[in-house]
Image 1: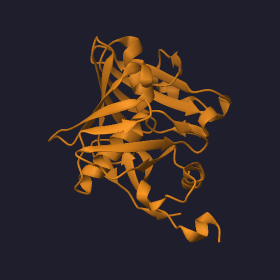
Image 2: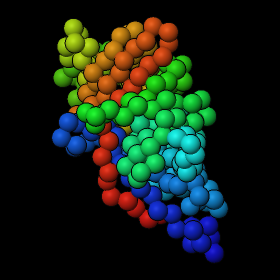
Image 3: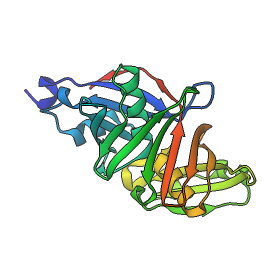
Image 4: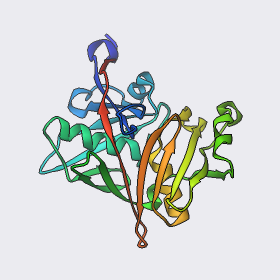
Length: 231
């Protein structure tokens, strides 16, 4: 029997960085590490097909280890998987204060208003090509097929005084034609602009950031459960 036949993997799915009504957001696949000990994690992520899938160890003393995969490679850090996994652990009665990823320990904070926050180093975000446009409406006309490699974040102010931004992100290098909501890119843009932001990405997903002058960035958003799948 193949590893897929011998080990059907239950993949929980959440949507991260939804709007205020719980719609939209970026789907995230979540698998307990103990359930996939004999499964190739990278192949699993490719079969799931979301922009990221995470493999999470059971928490110990309020702390959990996690590995992050796109359909084509493993990442040392990504924003939406960390926010989503923090919510998922809390929802199943195992809240954590720290999630350990390859880049380092990520601090978790859950607020009464429903937002999940993480605190990370700005340099943990991967390299993005940032393209600023003067007209936010123009972003909706950008064709993902224009981008053939790299990671591209196109953005425009919708209200600069408030720190409000509209954005889209394309990452063909990671096997992602377009990402609906990208936490790492929000962190990188926050560090580049050195200010807190309210970001509406893609079709309307919402991300919030807070900038600290010492190089730390807080990233927050809402998370809701979606339908699990069996791979």
